[in-house]
Amino acid sequence: MDPLVGIIMGSDSDLTVMEAAADILKQFDIPFEVTVVSAHRTPLRMMEYAKKAKERRLKVIIAGAGGAAHLPGMVASITTLPVIGVPIKSSNSIDGWDSVLSILQMPNGVPVATVALNAGKNAGILAAEIIGSSDEAVSKKIADYKSSLNNEVIEKARKMKKDGWENNFD
Image 1 (cartoon, rainbow, N blue to C red):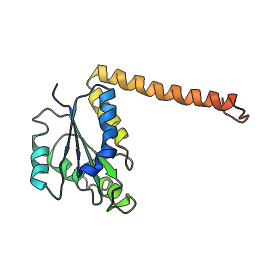
Image 2: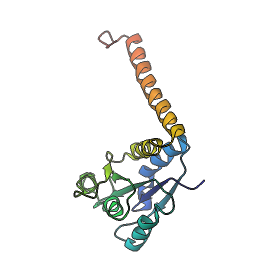
Image 3: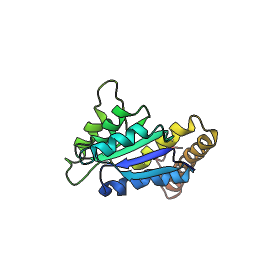
Image 4: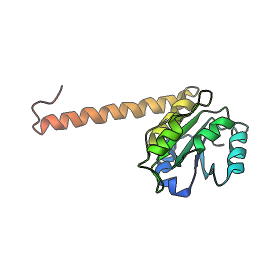
């Protein structure tokens, strides 16, 4: 099956963060592709990727970048597809804040959905929710996933109470 989500990153060193997006998309049975596309080192490759993404039937692009983190915004400026930016705390980063702000502070007209620092998993979930808005099978898998999160928290609260925490909320 052709990929519905493109996962791109500025460097292969970003893969450890971006793998979480791939893992959650696998869990929801959403086909995806993964590649390195650098806004600064391969600008023509980036432009080509963004221009052809919709034609190739991608529905969402997840773009991870550290440091100056221009990749998500530059891709969003070229494509009409939703772009989810993942700021990455990289070796040349200022505690990740430069990456967060570079992705978050986009000018009007060029939105980029931005998840938390190093939150590849949340980017994958958001991409799945976008796909799920028009695919009932994916929507059901997301609902089941969120239900499992609820159940995990309830179970942790029960365990906490059982283990002697008298002030636990019921």
